Amino acid sequence: MTRRRGIVVAVLLWGALAAADEPPASEPAVPDKIVLEEARVYFDAGRQAYESGDYTTAIRSFEHAFEKVPRPEIAFSLAQAYRKQYIVDSDVAKLKRAAELYRRYLDEVPNGGRREDAVQNLGELQPQLLRLEALKAAATPPPAPPPPPTQLMVMSPIAGIHVAIDDGTLVAAPITKEVAAGPHRIHAEADGYVSTEVDGLAVEGRLVVIEATLRERPALLTVDADASADVNLDGRPIDVGAPIATLAGRHVLTVGERGHNPWVREVALERGRLTHVRAELESTGQRKLAKVILGVSAAVLAGAATTTTLAFIAQGNAQDLLKKKGASGWSSSDLAEYDSQRSRRDTFVLTSGILYGAAALAAVTGLLLYVADTPATPRLGREILPVLGPGEVGASLTGQF
Image 1: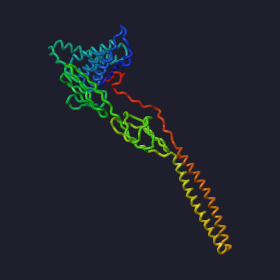
Image 2 (image 1 turned 90 degrees about the vertical axis):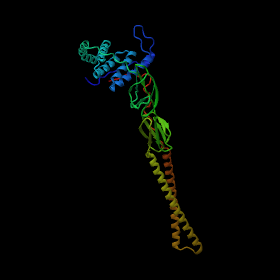
Image 3 (image 1 turned 180 degrees about the horizontal axis):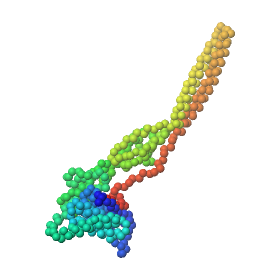
């Protein structure tokens, strides 16, 4: 036989139970929410014990769940646990109980489900049971079994949780411990969760299951960007440089800033851990062009200043020649030089005017491109919603092993 066989057990959703009124007289009563929740906890405990190879605890847990909610699917799970434990301790009573539960499942599930598995397992157990019953009839009656132990079992839907009962050492859940009847203290902790203390009451001769649930620690995120940047996490604005708390998991981070291409990343945040993100934004092509045009404007303005200076120099030279004419008269060469300086002055004045106009036009164009460069921040195409924990209303009681 294979080590593991699939068993799927589903119990009604709480929402369906809440919507149900009094059942018709011809139908069995639906368990109330308290009974159903207790059955769920004990079934989950049995499933975890079964998966860890603790079939004795699985049997006690499944029996309690079956007592509260006697459904054929739970009967099948219980039969599996009895069959496995018989292989361990060769207790004929467990083999007999497994066969009884397989028959009950076949009676209550006429079609589909796990009938093939139940028929196969029962066919394998039946010859062994008949042979063992014959040997038992000829043997001396066995001594009375010892009273059932008083046990606490701590389980949790949280992976990686560690628990300690009273002053015991921390061990990975699930844990089953034989204790004295009465109150006990359970400590539970897990990476990324807030540690907690739970009270448990052990009942004489019973297996009491305690489900330890922990509150998640928030994930922390710090975004390093320019103070003028617009930072959003899943479409929600956040502050630059300040740690913010959010749910663990994958999130979409967007950073937008005037004159820069939008920065978009998906970040994975872990419970109880600080993640630091540096947003390196690249300038847009328009911003780069605006800077080039402003640089050209400055260069043209510098050229205009140079030609203006040259115009003043030419004007000064012409004035000096006029003074010379009044003092000692002009020669033909002085007249030619005077005309040349005036021509140079006029040329530089015209050139300066053109350059000043070009510099002004370039400056206005560059400034308009610079100011108008506001890329739109990308909008998210999805909304990230928080997910409730294992204790949420509406969770079905389902397991497979």
